[in-house]
Amino acid sequence: MLGGLARRVTFVDQLKAKKNPLIIVDSGRMFQDPRVDDDAEQVRMNSRLMARTYRRMGVQAVNVGDLELLQGIPFLKDQASQGLNLISANLVDPSTKNRIFPPYFIFTIENRRIAFLGLITSDLTSEIRRAMGDDAAVIDPIDTAQEMVAQLREKADVIVLLSCLGLDKERELIRKVPGIHFVMGGQEGRFLRTMLKEEETFIAQSYWAGMYTGRLDLTLKDNTAPFHDAGEKFRIKTEITDLDHRLDRIKNVLEEGENSVLEFTLQKITRKRAKLQETLDGLKKFPYTGNLFQWQVVPLNNTIKEDREVADWIGKAGFTESPQK
Image 1 (tube, rainbow, N blue to C red):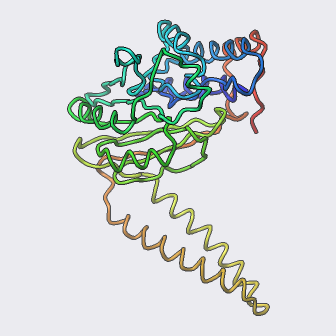
Image 2 (image 1 turned 180 degrees about the horizontal axis):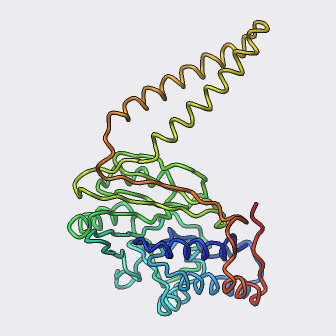
């Protein structure tokens, strides 16, 4: 139920110990879905525990997602008053049209300004709208992004969207709103080891139930230049090696006799390998000296020890960590 929460704290503490500049954020949907548990008080206790742990980790920006809205705006305001750094650019007060939480945070690290903008989908279920009541309204995320990114281009060197929109909507937004460098999404719980690319923007997705955490390393040298994936060459080389092994096995079988299915597979894999090799050859011409990023998806499994303080909080609250393999 709480995924690798205590392990996540240990992972963050290990990164902090390295003394490198670090910003910790969450794209939203951090709370338990009360629709799948009949015990409302247990769900609320879970949410308080999550918020407490995020404060313990020093999370610097948390986008308000749909599961957060199910807790109600008064609860979210209370948690924000206690130090949970909630953001949302398109969640507004219906009467005043003012934003309920800051639309973004900007952090300066080594003279580089990195902005984190929060957006939530406007396609909300009836349960979520009832939970919001008259306390909040969600305005169009794309219109909001156009307004906010125009502001942030003058204020920040890197713009990161913390998104609860869903992948299709994120792609649409990127096409209509240039200038976003990275999107951190998690609305649909997709598992992607590598970032997707739409226009000049890279998109990451977080898996469900907190079973993984993402780490994005940035090297920023030119504010006007695009980013390039520093890990792309290695991944392509690894994939080519795997394809070569598959080709060798198929060829060995075909030496024993004809097999139309395997011959078709051989041709298909050969074409794929050629395309990958062509991409790799093109990348070799690119000197990795500009703006670079490297994305890792880290499993919060038993190789990472639980933080004892947070594990104790969980135990006292009557929860147990979900086993990770």
